[in-house]
Image (cartoon, rainbow, N blue to C red):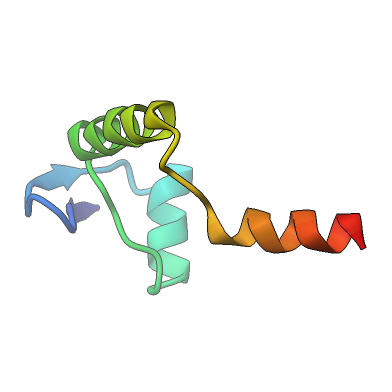
Length: 68
């Protein structure tokens, strides 16, 4: 199965029966991101997390509900 990365437009070849290919085939809303882009986003997210200014909005709501 040929897939295209949504960030860098790189075209990759996936095995037709791998779980990622099945997910993309059966649920068109899912998108493919190549391993290089995935690693880059992961590194930058960890850097932002380390600064202390990175917050996840859903976690605040969950914490407030637990405190009530």
